[in-house]
Each structure stands twice: as C-alpha cells, then as structure tokens.
Length: 180
Image (cartoon, rainbow, N blue to C red; front, side, top):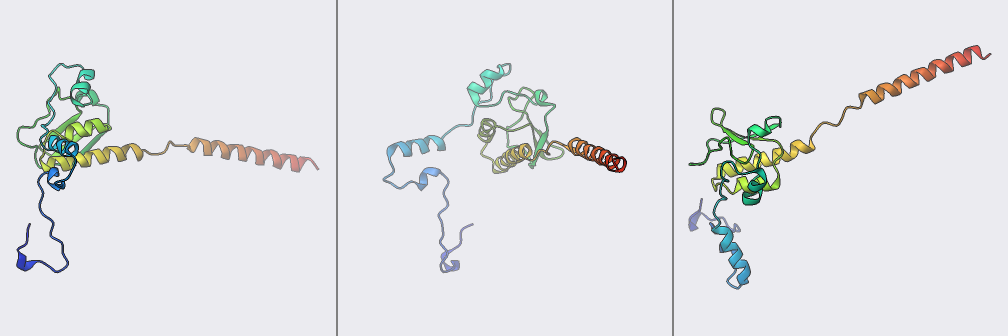
C-alpha cells in the first residue's frame, strides 16, 4: 500500500514497489548480470515430465525427485495450510514428487524429506504467493523433522549399569561380612 505525499512520516524512507529483480540493477550493471536476471525474470515454470518416464529421466529432465505419492506411502507426511491450489495446477498419481493437495482439509501434504532439487522444482511450478508460502513451510518442516528425530533410547544401557552396580554391591557385602 502506498501513501500519498501528505501522509508521509518524517524520516521514513519510501521504497518503490518493484515487480522484477532486474529493476534493482543500476544502469551501469555488467551485461552478463543484466542478461542473467532477464533470463530469471522470464523463466517459465518447469515442465511436468511425461507419464511413464523413468525416475532417473525425471530427475535429469525436470529436477523432480521422481518418486510418486504412492511410492512414498511409508514416509512421514508433512503439511502446510493452503486455501486452494493455483488455477490449473493438479498433482496426479504419476506426478514426480510425493505431494498432494487435500481440498477438504485445505492442506498441501508432502511425504518424506524434501530435497533442495525437489523444493526448487515445486517452487517454480507457480508464482502464486499462497502456494509458494505453503511450499516454503513444508520445506522448513521437512528439514526440521530430520533434525528433530528423538535420540535413540539407551535405557537398556542404564539398566545394565544399575544391575552391574547392584551385583557389585552384593558381592562386596558378602566379602566384607564373611571375610572377618
């Protein structure tokens, strides 16, 4: 939201609204930088691989992981709130990422750990801000889930140590009592 000149607060710097990254460049920017940003601004969303493409071909062609929703059935599910998928977007059974949209619960659900390649692939599918925010949230939750795994239980080790200590105490008791 832009303010009119009368309502500007003193000392507040008004930043122009920028719709493309290349608008940030100074006129003297090197041509290679300008060209790269122009390419990024005009980049099309990645193509969805053809049904039946092998997982290895899917990775090479699109950057997707090549694992479908059904193939990732045993993995943990991570979700983020999303009111609706962007127009024209659908995740079919042969979609090369383990992702689905649950329209009833309004959740974007991903199965397993989201790799950087998967994140980049999914993020480029749409420029819808709600979708991008949901993909970002799923990516963060996916990473956190890996690092927040509970530590392996070592209760048996404490039990074994306690048992050894009790046995040593009993032996010491009998040695001291019957030794005199």
